Length: 381
Image 1 (tube, rainbow, N blue to C red):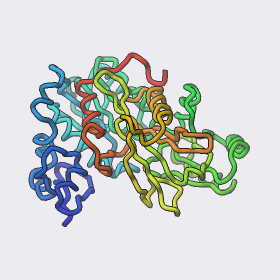
Image 2: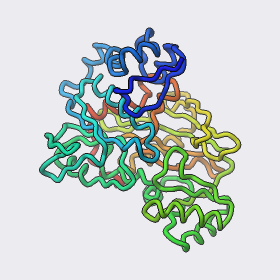
Image 3: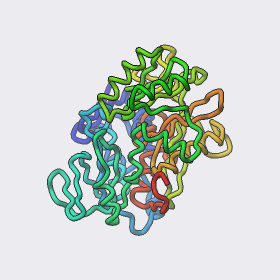
Image 4: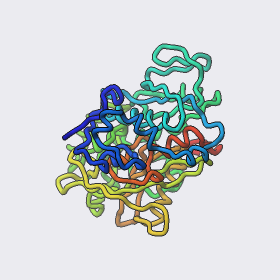
């Protein structure tokens, strides 16, 4: 039996929960305290009601700050565009968790929010400034000027507006180099001369990336100059003219390790979870459309699933960007562990891997939105 969450709750979400096992539903929805939750009860009662009853005990609620932020604006991408097909599910999950932790939530698409320093318009209607803004995703053509103004006027904005530029892969190379972060050798191509530079530094095959792509889409392997030029021409025409070229590391064998960071209430970055994706032999990407195998890795405690220096490089990359929540992809190369890229709006890991609540992205992110503080270090500085 396949039971989908109520359409009015999830909007355009398409995730179906297979079977009627309570364990399956708890894994998919991150609900860990009620042993009686089944797919049938999710369908009957909805995610929001189940989350309210299952997320926190009274003792945990009492441990929260006395005056957490309550009025939250949740800004998200358009689920009809590009890689945002699962955005309806993400927004529903975040909305449910925010409400479960006591917040009043208004959700709106990024391009339906504007603030000129005087009036905040959401879906064309003026409203008071919220206490917090949670930005799930920016569109390719979006700018963060309105978010910067909101932060300047005292609104707690997550992620830091100045850090959202690093959703674009073309901006990561300069950041990693400036901060001495060991990363995969990269050339940001703006014209034919940059292709020549890449050929001198890398051998074929060469990885070619659309800077705004995600989920393994917009990532190709060029076997020669003609394929390289074709990929670059197509990707540059769709974006701002920049294309990311990277050295291909066959020794990684299609494996990419991802480390999730979310700030705690004091603003310190905490490694919350780690996992490894392994694509099939027919696909060099670990998270492409052909799907990969995912397994958990310990990223804290005495038995780490990958070397501490790899976790530290990932942490330094997140901190350098000024991101509050980020998944960092690292790969093993002959030269050691290297950062591949940052993902400021990663997929929700607890939807795919059974994690304890303390390691899940959504509850930790929401806790920071409602109760967290941020250091004065500027993004990218």
